[in-house]
Amino acid sequence: MADRTINLDVYRYNPDVDARPYFDRYELPFRHGMTVLDSLFDVLEKKDGSLAFRYSCREAICGACAMFVNGHYVLACQTQVDSLKTDNITVSPLPHLKVIKDLVVDMTPFWNNYKAIMPYLVQRAETQEKENIQSPEDRKRIDKMVDCVLCSSCYSSCPATWTGNRQFLGPSAMQKAARFAFDTRDAKHGERVDLVSTEAGLFRCHAAFNCMEACPKDIPVSEAIHALKRASMARRLGIGRK
Ligand code: SF4
Ligand code: FES
Image (cartoon, rainbow, N blue to C red; front, side):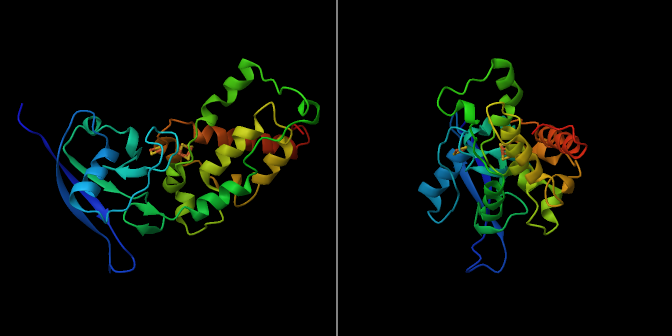
């Protein structure tokens, strides 16, 4: 079989020295099993050591390598080059987020929003001294929500975050709020729902559904947000859970 070459167009931008972003093209030999992240390592190690990108686990569980590849949000470490069905690959940073350098974006607003939703389980008093048991059925209800790897693809894809309102909690933080609010082991359902029932939270979500499309973990983000909206309404009507 003839040697196969891939053409990698990579977004480059160093705000300290570049007037504007540009793309660099790298021609790389393809190898079986190669991921997009592998191709970036090939660039880094063999072509240009100044290329900046994030990664950590290389197993699709840390979310650090989220990027925009050929027009899709992906985790670079789990995306096989072969799966792209083309040898012309364009790699860009997550859109609508401030670029620090090349493929590295500023995640500060994302993490600030995450911190704001109390992102940890609060034990009920009666379970503090013993095992906090959950039935398989109750766990199943939050199964998909638990899968979130905090990659921020949904946040980057959401039109409500593009409008300059960085106060908007964004889809990821709200789906994480749902993950705890609907966890039967948690003691703070009502407080969590109230926390996101704000102009900058649930009511700024206009259900564009971009988040569902973007999520590389196939999490039904909009559904989680809508479940919170229903819980919020129930509380306002005085029939919601505490
Ligand atoms: S919901 Fe999906 S897209 Fe959003 S941060 Fe979690 S894993 Fe990433
Ligand atoms: S490096 Fe952790 S998700 Fe890709």
